Length: 490
Length: 145
Image (tube, rainbow over all chains, first blue to last red; front, top):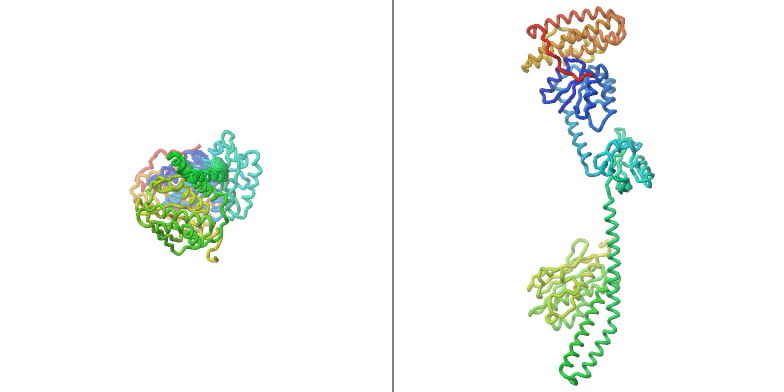
């Protein structure tokens, strides 16, 4: 640590210099006020000065006043040394900008402790300055007139100016012309506000090369020891790119929503309009099979059979596609739905399949959920239907359970079927994805896609746990009640 | 603290608390105990040279009744006198400063003469302590104009 001893008394300079050098300080001396000011004006000069009050050219108090008036951002700790020790002297010295005050004759221990305290303050000041200068966010301080009195490097980069071009000007001087008034108004509001911290505001500034920079401006009042507003401490976060990305994302989301809606509409119209001609094809090929079976040759019988099968499969495919498109476009209202009642409907609908397979379907106590009842029936019917369909030689055992998970219920449908390999765990929810041939397990590959779409429409998620040969458990979540509803009142 | 505290500027009574002839004490004694005898010798040497010069300035100010200059010069001398444990000198300076600052009508030339007498006594005591005639080491380099 370099320090200056300024005293016109040679004996004092020698004595203090010797003692402080012994304590490890690098000492520079000056024998008058002009010499002291010359040393302190050097940016590489000492940052702690011990100043005698009475000196030719400029006394210690005058030096304190000038150093504080010409601060270039570097803090110099000023310790006034004098034989004067009346309260009026102390007030005059400290009022001129001295940090500390020590009376002659000097007690070396006291001087050392005070210099050490000054060094600690300077270290803290230096750390604070580095944090300020090296902060990645633009930062400045103003007085109550809006004049910028301190600015960091990030703000210089943001505005494309050197600190010298920014200091002394007002924040709104850097706003784009259309935002100057807004800049003045938000500054004035922040200075006059009863709260120290203002709501963030957005301001468009002139950046480097004249480019507009959108910033989020945060303003905090700086208050003096009496609680009066002395200025503002402000940060400016460049949100130009963020806002551009947000706009892009919004546009993309809107495009995607429109595209999805169009696709759903297309799927609905196509599958709906295809039904009628297909029904005609299926009816007449079935009529053909009925009337002419065995009356033509074997090849003709075989071809008619293929045509009838194809038409039936196409009818099923179109029915399933229609069901999928209806999840989004023809969904019912959400209301409180007792899942136990839904299960009763499902068991009735799946009665023949359950009977034919010898399946045992067991359900735990099932909760009330906030859902579209028709779609809940379709969801559970698809999952339980799959549990029965994808079985091996054993009779199917299906277990339906529910567990509370925060604001949701997690419903699980567990079976003892053939299972699904982990690599297919996500694929099975995609439309037309089938893991088996039609001969092994018939179907269109749309059922689980419908399930996922229903669950997602309800704001939930669906997934599975499975081991090939060890059965599968499908889980899905549903909200317990409508958003904003207190469940305890239900 | 040394014999005279800083209230001495305004209080002649306090100044007269310990009018003793010069003897090594206070900070200088600490330095000697720390093995810094040579540096103490340098301080004595510098003090005696500086004080002689400033005494001449005081004499001129007293002759021309420039009481501001006389008070300032007395004040400046007092600091190093206290540091050097030259209590009697400091006491006399304190008196001159007090009277001059109060623009009192006094025989300031006589007071400076008295200061000169005590300075000679003090000088002898100091040289005797330092073990011979004062040395003339070059002063510490200063950043003056």
